[in-house]
View 1: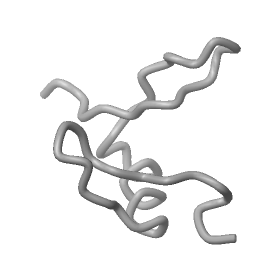
View 2: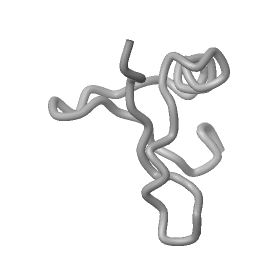
View 3: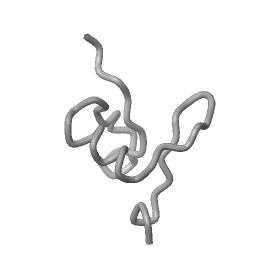
Length: 50
């Protein structure tokens, strides 16, 4: 299954982000986890402050 069951999109416009692009953004720290998961993980990534 593409995306390992995850759907990646931008907020607030809801534009889709491909799985490969999302992994690249995360791996290169272009987006960072918000830590908003109930169990210590994250469901949301954000652009870090410069």
